[in-house]
Length: 120
Image 1 (spheres, rainbow, N blue to C red):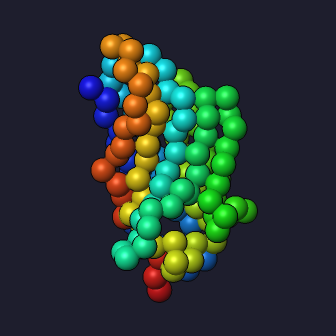
Image 2: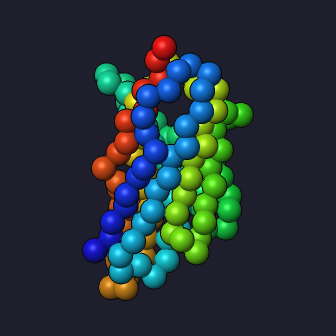
């Protein structure tokens, strides 16, 4: 089994910052890509940021320059630093990890999601 657990969501004022963290545990041999998606009510899910095992990062267009993803491979952890937050960043943020298990299964595992609300 694989567990993906997020933390760090909450309420923040416009212009503020939040840091999300995600830890993966379980019967894992390796993790290829880790990242975050978000989904706001009535909107499609969109990529926030991702990071490969080699450190290559990618960001959604509206997050560039404001969000930074970082990864700690030793801890199976990925962090998302979000700065200059806007009300339109309000969404449920979900962490994912593309894992290879000890049973040699390869799949994308998801966390439960954490709410981020940007409001004054």
